[in-house]
Structures are given as structure tokens and as C-alpha cells.
Image (tube, rainbow, N blue to C red; front, side, top):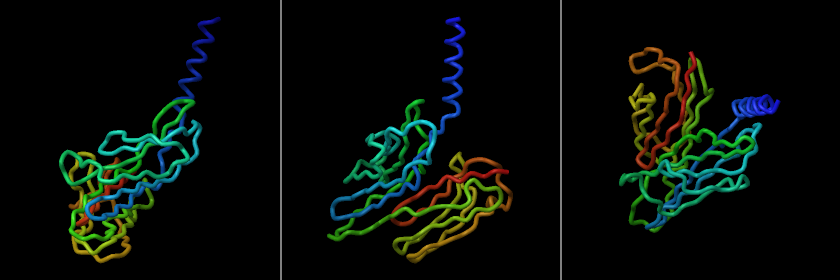
Length: 218
């Protein structure tokens, strides 16, 4: 009888874990300001969609390592002059949510790549407020990509596969400050439908690089 009870408890725990919704934080973005000679990075996010487990904390990742764990009531984090990624003038951030009953960690938010500003000006220069979204996501045939340019810049917007290969380039030109909207029809550069799976929309300006996950369903 004891063995049967323990087996039953184990089954209940397994079913509960498999059905747990470890939802990630939402609407993650970064404000990057430069006041000579310091770079200021302000991270912001919204709570995840409600799920069965209890939200207990958030993990803040920089360059794929946890740098802070903050309470569920904290929805921001700031740094001054953090270390670069492997000697490059770029810094990568993302956020995850931590849960208990059952315990687990969500998938990460989109990873945001921020550049490092270096000038001789003693003024605040907003070099990037990452604004890159798409709708719908996931999508079957076409998705609309929305992005904003904060400073006049040459812009390249490309779609990559999970191997890091360029699938197609949608923008490759000088853009003025403003909001832009374009459609991707789920085709590669040759006009062939891409297969189902995960892709990455990557926008690169003279000041920063931002990536967004896209999911194609056929």
C-alpha cells in the first residue's frame, strides 16, 4: 500500500510539473544613455502572463551569465559601464522568471544586444531604446515587423535561421528617425517558403543591434 501511495504521489508531481506554465517576462526593453565617459543601461520588463506555479523571482542575465536575482515586485535593473562580451563593444541582456510549486525557470525574453558609446561630448545621448516587434507571432504566411529608429542611421534588418545563416535581408539603407512597418512573407531571398521553425529578426544600426524571435508554422 505504501509503494502504491508513493507511486501515486510521484505521478501527480510529474503531471503537475509537465503542465506547469513557466511563462517568461513580457515587453523587455533597454534604455541606453551615455554621459561622457560612462554608459548607463536601464532594463525594464513586464510581469509574465499568469500561470499555475508561483512567481518568486527574476533572473537578470548579462552575456549569458546571471548577474542579479530580483524580487517579483521589481521590474527594472540598471548598470553603469558593465563588462563587454568577449572583448567586443557589445553587451547582451535577457530576463527569465523563476517559479516554485513546482520549481522552474522560464524561457528567456528576447536577447537585446546593446552597443557601447564612446564620444567626447559631455551630453546625454540616447543611443538605443530597442523597439522591435512583430505581429502575429507565431505566424503561418505573413507577419508585420514594426521597428523604430531613434537617430538617423544606416539600418540593416535581416532574418536569420537557428544556424546563424541569413535567410533574407528586408532593409539595407539609410533611415531617418521614425517608426517603420514592413511585412515578411515567410520566404527566403530566392522566394522559397521557409520551413516551420524558429528564426531571428535582427536589426542593426550604427548604435546598437536588436534581435527578435520569430516562429513560422506551416
